[in-house]
Length: 478
Image (cartoon, rainbow, N blue to C red):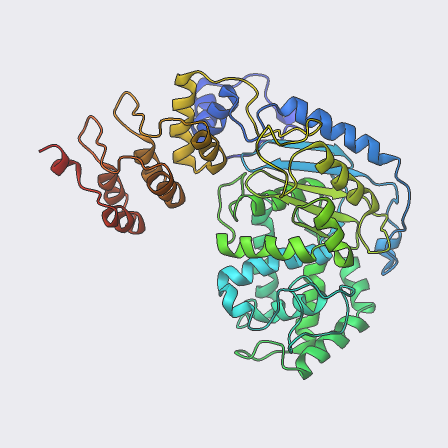
C-alpha cells in the first residue's frame, strides 16, 4: 500500500485527473474497500483516536524522572517533549504531540538487528550464541549465563548479534545493509543518523569496549568469521546513533505486529518465526529490570531506550511508539510507562484479557470488534477480501460467528480460491483444517483452487492441497 504525506498542503493538488485517481485506487483497492465497508482493523477509528488522545493528555501532567546523562546530546534534549504515534497493520495512523521529534534508536536497534540476523541465518544459529532469559540486572551488566549473554536485548547480546550480522562484508557495507533494513521497517518514513551522538558515544564507550573484550575472552563472538573488536564496537555505536521519530518508530512496531511485513509498503523485512521470537524476547526482557511488572500490568511486547522512546506491539493489530525523555529508575520513559498502563486499562489489549464479551470487564473496550451488524453481502465480500489479504483476525472472528466459508461469489470463486491466489498458506491451512471447507470447489471456468496454485507456481500450496485430496477442475467436471 502506498503512503501519502498530507502534512504539507502545498504539495496536495486541489483536483486530480481521472487517470491518476484510478491509479491511486488500483494500488490501494483493498484498503479503500475495507475503509468504505468499515472493515478496518480498528473499525471505529474516530472513537479509538479520541480515547488515545484522552490518555495522552492525562499523561502529560506526569513530571517525574530525569533525562539521560550519558552524552551532551541526550542531556540537552527538551525534557518536556511528549509525542505518540500509532500505525495499524492495515495502515491506519494517528500522530499526537511532538511525534516528529528525533531521537536515536540506541537499544531499539537491537530489536531490528535480532530480526535481521535470525532471518538471514536462523533462530537456532543465533541462540547458540545468545540466551533467551531476563538477566535480572541492568542492560549494560557484565554478566553471562551458561557462557552466553542472557538475551539479545542487552548490550552483551547486541554486540554478539553485531558480530553475527553479515560478517564477511566490510564496515561500511555492514552499516549500509543495516540502515537500509531499518528504513524498510519504517516504511520509508524518516530515518536519519546523528553523527555528533555517534562521536559522543565513542567518547563514552569504556563500558562498551569492556563488554567487547569480555565477550571475546569468553568466546561469545562469531566463531565462523574473524572478529575485529574495534570495528565491532564502533559498528554497535553507529547502529545506536540511527535517528527515528515517533512516526517512523510506530511503523517499525507495526511491521513487527504484521509478522515482518511493512504495512505501508508490503515489503517483507523479516521472517515470521524471527518476529515471533523477537516479540517473545520483548515480552520478558524489553523494559529492563521493570519487565516482569510491565508484563503483569500491561501484558504486551515492548522495548524502551535511554533517549526516552518506547515501542509497543499488539500482534496482528498495531504498533505504537511513545516518546518522552524523562526516565524512571529503571531507565524507562516515565510518561510512556504510565501511558501503557492506562492504555490496557481502557482497552482489552492485555494478552490475557478475556475475549468473550460476557466475561470481559464492562469498563474496557475491544476496538477490534465490529459495533454494527454487517449485511450478508458485506460479510461475504469481506470474507473473500480477507482470505486474499491474509486478514486472520477477521477470519477468526467470522469462524466464531458461524459464517459460511464455502460461500461462492457470482463467478463461483470461494474463500479458498482467493486465499490460493493471494499465496496465503496460513489462510489455506485455516480454511482446510479449522473451517473444513470443500477443498474441491470449482468456479464457472471449471478452475479449482489446485488449478490456481499451479497457475501461479505456488509449489508449497500445490503440495499442501494435493496432500489433502485436491483435484484439478477438469477432473471435477467429469
